[in-house]
Length: 464
Image 1 (spheres, rainbow, N blue to C red):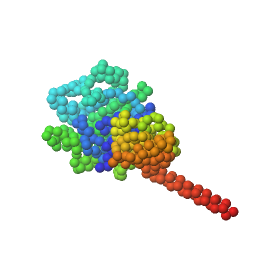
Image 2: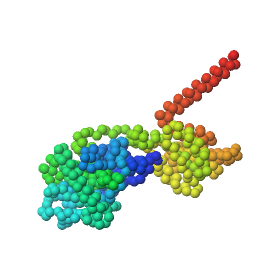
Image 3: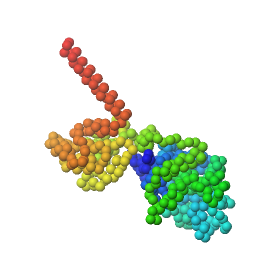
Image 4: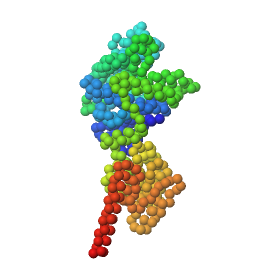
């Protein structure tokens, strides 16, 4: 399936990977949030991803951030891709503000068993399943490994948030919920309950994460609810939860979904996007990783290609820089690393995890001589081209180092190039970039034209 399960690029630092979202640091003031197509349910992530889900979540969040910015500022800057947003760096407040308009979900399940208080809020007696509260209620939880109900007073006493900030969060949350209910009512939908998350930017309270999406909120069809309030069908990921509950194996939830459930889930996510925004989410055909790469290059988040020069020691820096100077003229990202195959070879696994799954084309140059275990270790673990370019100080040193680099073990396909400039050019060509291929073709044509001109000039002198 054409899904974005995770995003890997060695050009941007990944700082967090959650159940669904991944965060990358762009600089001190901005980060990149990726909404993947992963789906979590019952506190675990399914192995099966849902095509288009991340685009729905990310695009819906952008829609709501725009439509609530008059109530409170948020961290959203712009969409980089249907699955990716650029946001302002904020210090998160580790509290989820849950607003409930109806007695349903976990609150109802507890109520059935006699639990009349949720996060310090007393629920009236005699209520029925899915009945609306007289006014929406706030039931905050802490953001820990497992979310915990907590009262506002406990939040302050335990140091999660100050009394002043909590009061502001509570006021804003109720306003956001009212805005969401009003807009959705116009579209024949009910915003049942939701969560809001906040952060601080320069000590100012802002809205972060997501807002009014199928993953953070519960929606009902207004028509369906009026016909049968207690059996109102949810328009969010409850469809998947219901499937998992009905199809347990030996009392355990399945970790995969059949194709028909995946297709129906995709349809439901796309439908809810259309119902909320009034627009149709474009079909996201084609290779999703190629699309993401194109958009990140277009927005200058990454370069279109990445070349790592991995040195056995820092003493090889001058040799590495000679190659780096050549490659940077071609507008690709070049990274210098120091890894010893013998002394800290375990770090090669870290490079492999990043380079092998990267969205952009990658090439690696190994700079090590004598017993060149580095080139072999890299080639044995990487799925990208590896080029040995050993350093040398004289002809004897050259022969020893080149021989070591040539004698690679079996199943370690590393090439060897002596001249550092040629190694740089080979690495560039291995990226197979259309832009670079055109530039190389122009350079080759220019070289041939120069040779012809030199020949004609020489012939002219001889004839003269």
